[in-house]
Length: 119
Image (cartoon, rainbow, N blue to C red; front, side):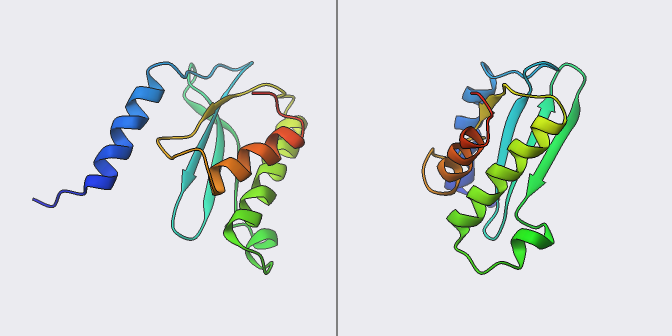
């Protein structure tokens, strides 16, 4: 059986976070997923079990730009803030999904705050 220590550790941290972080329709959960190449973010209503708004660096506008992954994460943060404002969402609960709060995750969060999201 393959055992990946890094994934196991992240899942433990993720479950610890998810015990307390819960999104609703008026204050959705802002969940971040980070792959090796792209970063994805969703605003989720946990009561209804639906995704309200989503954004990622895999969108053609962001993917084609020549920038570092941290800069692209900031672009995604601004994009999710714009989409949330259009949907009438101004406050969220941040779910870093077990990732450490630095680098791409921090860049995305700070850009979303600059874009007007409150968390």
